[in-house]
Image (cartoon, rainbow, N blue to C red):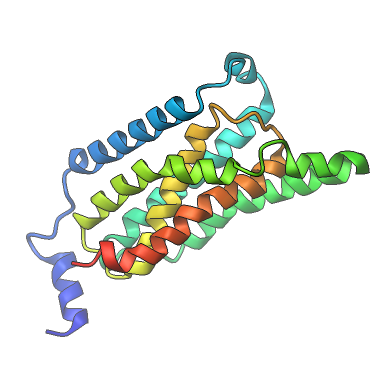
Length: 211
């Protein structure tokens, strides 16, 4: 049987319907809960979180992380279904990044020169990306588990999408602890933290998603 015939059979055959929504959501919710518990156990929530909820800067990093998490999950979902359209995925993923980088450029341009280094480095750059990557691991396992129940064909790209979705979800959770409010910091170091599990997913995808 040719590969194209196999893909057509999987995508259109009577037994190839998508799994029930509950089958997909429960592992993801479990992974997100586990990532949240891991963050609480290791780091805890910011003591002034309720106050920060009134600050636009907090919502800027949260919305950025949420947008990437949504784009990452859509990418993982599309890449785990043979024949699904994926042409728009690069734009959905890069859109939030471009918007934040533009905002970061404006912030740097408006800041006095001596303050620019602080906007970029913050106080937690040494461990922020590593913490996001660590918190992403339960979610990463959950997304891979969901994808294995489907039929991904581009395994390396699908694994990268799983890692990206997990890393972005972990960034959302990490917002509850992170003291950084600079969009310049978020646009680089948060993204770096998300790209660590993305690279891990690309490395492990062919092995863990093979069927």
